[in-house]
Length: 172
Image 1 (cartoon, helix red, strand yellow):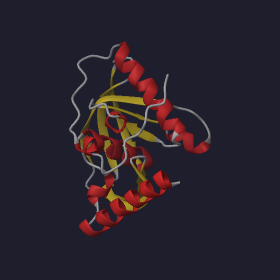
Image 2 (cartoon, helix red, strand yellow):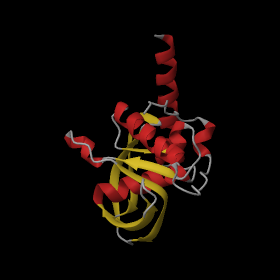
Image 3 (tube, rainbow, N blue to C red):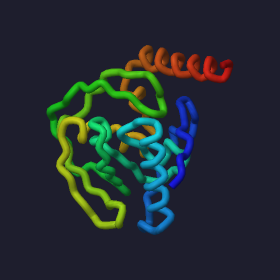
Image 4 (cartoon, rainbow, N blue to C red):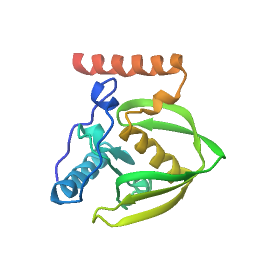
């Protein structure tokens, strides 16, 4: 496993729509393992392949990381089958938009279908943090960042903050 660099907004590659995975082979399993390692190193709970520069419909998550445990999950070619009309407002952040946290409204519950790391078709009913995180990471697969759900003004402010932090980091 190796840690891959995470793309930072406004990198144009983050706006790419990811391609489906034809089959889960050793290359995809290595990508999943690298993504998990990269996510853990960055202390995140979710990561989409496009965030490490690979435009494939693959994402990883580990919500237990917040409690100091590891329960990694891989979602390959995920798709939402159903979403509730009820919505929830949750403060979201993103490894590709560091140090920015904003409220985003999303469906409270979803049902999703995906292939797991072994290529087995799975379905999941998700609510709360799992539903939010899945929707957030699946947005990445379609070239959408969480800040794209914000007003134009808030999005502009967030991107300026990220760019300023990048400049300060390079200067130090």
